[in-house]
Length: 174
Image: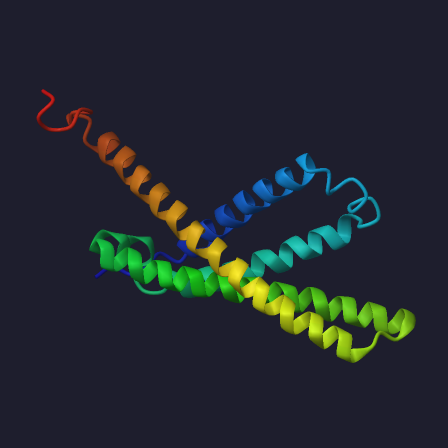
């Protein structure tokens, strides 16, 4: 039983985060949600948020791919099920940890500026973390499905590249 390569989690997490960012930012831009939001945000906070999210994603992906990594998909439905469960859990962890990080920074900034009430921040954290966990879990599950599809497609391409004598047509179509 082969173990996952040490670069696999970095590649998978980077791909997933960039794909999610492109889809999310494009959807927000098309919907007009970014017009006033990013004007005062700045480059450094934007990079800091992206790096924080990338580190969370890299750590959670490393845990989700522990053991055989994407090669575990070769075990059939059991391998996919196991990876899907870990992907949903990792996504929920990322969503919750990301929101908590944003809330901690917001709390500290607000406390320094005008003394935010602790009770309102705790309520926001409680409800927000529940929602972030569910949304993160859904995104994690979707990411596993996309990763599995990419892994399958790459395997087909590499198999044909390594063995060019293989027919491109399925057996029986000859």
